[in-house]
Length: 318
Ligand code: UDP
Ligand code: MG
Image (tube, rainbow, N blue to C red; front, side, top):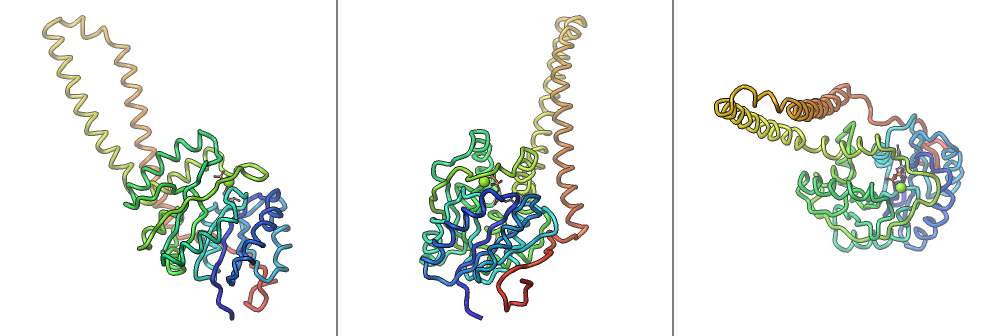
């Protein structure tokens, strides 16, 4: 079997509006690179016409399509793609053309020339709403702290990984994961380059607020216990404040008498609501960890492959 130098892995969830444009831009780029390549497209349980369109691409010998049984999420879908890659360098990207395929040759050559394990990317002039960009700045800051790796942009999925890093990631079998962060656990030589970022070509984002918050939790909670530590320190600080407040009330009572102490009762209610709210929040964070432990101990597969189409001769269904 011929050696594959580059594998491109693309998760697809309800992207019928983008697939034709994606392939018509990606194919010429890959053919012009002059490297042996394969393109792995993973259908992550799309409810639209994506899978039918994808199957239409496998007549090309360089394309394989992995069909999952249901929607497992972007990162699990990429892992499913990783489980069948053959390339020495594995590049991930989105299907909606927010990551221009034209950046792949540069990404590949940086990877090769520097013998890197991971090449990340920074989205130049990011084409997303302020409501996406601002929280992502905070998340990037947290990610740097958690991983100890000073990458600037953790959210851009146009990235290159060496094959050994990919293999180590697959071996983890994590239920909830965030691939760029997981990769840093196994990568020694890491760098970051700037890439162009575009508007989504067609259709709409697959990340409603709920899914987005969950994804950020996958990054923060699956890689550290920082939120629990924050709660602990916050709790210590709050009880110290409580002691000071109590002392203040006791002094005021001694100096001004009983009446004064009863007057601030509504302010006290307001403060109480804040603290009760914070306690529920803290319980929620702990619940999030317990939920994650629960899912891990059940040991269900992170994804299930229904079918693989394409690349005749590799034993896969065509
Ligand atoms: N995606 C996926 N499964 C999901 C959600 C998204 O495979 O459950 C894919 C999607 O098809 C796209 C990529 O992940 O290729 C990024 O998704 P999207 O563009 O919706 O995210 P955004 O750019 O809005 O963050
Ligand atoms: Mg997108």
